[in-house]
Image 1 (cartoon, rainbow, N blue to C red):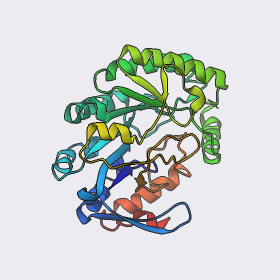
Image 2 (tube, rainbow, N blue to C red):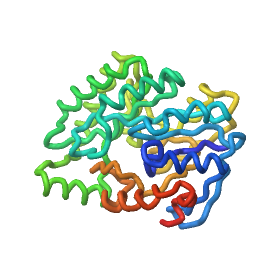
Image 3 (cartoon, helix red, strand yellow):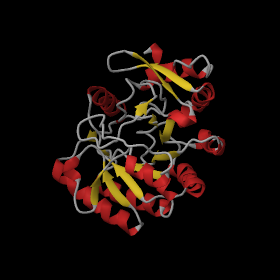
Length: 298
């Protein structure tokens, strides 16, 4: 049995729910690995899936399908990114006053331990400085209190494509994105952990061990131990298998494809740019069956 990650590479719940349900119906997914190009296939039969770790900024399209998936044997947790950033950074992400009630609904349906809030990334800029994040995080933590017990966070990694996109943003708007010095990151992480504790949450640092302290723990975003606690009947022995440096994730199989999420987030590492992602999403959205090998067209 495997843990399925759906997906770090694209927002399946927000944009590819029909494709995902078609794959569930047919019982498998086939794709070409972005690391080497080898064609892969994996069973999605309930008896072969320990659990599904969903990743999304908008679970609304998937929400009403979840009970049927649960009834036929699937178990899941929800990594839910809610940053509340200004729209200029996340052009097509619903605002927090829309997504917070969805998070609360998920908690009612599957308990708060299955809802994993991501305040991620902490994007510092000329309009979202350190003080902004203290205030915004406190507002969101207050709104989410009782619907989650964990908050995962990181600061952006400025890959080449991220640098290009943030530089373009600065040229078009004058808004400058900033990579704070490590001392500022450590101080802010500690402050946010204090705020989180007031609202019954723990903070988890994703892929940045230097931020770990007394109240900031190492993140295992795909967490075999958490899943075993939630669904002990589904779990088998698992091993750590991080996806990048300092990643604490347990082994999983990611079924998503890069360059297929049209949220348009300026900090995104999974898209070359918004135009490419929108074009590919439109191609794949024509027919969920035609997209059954969505990532073979990489």
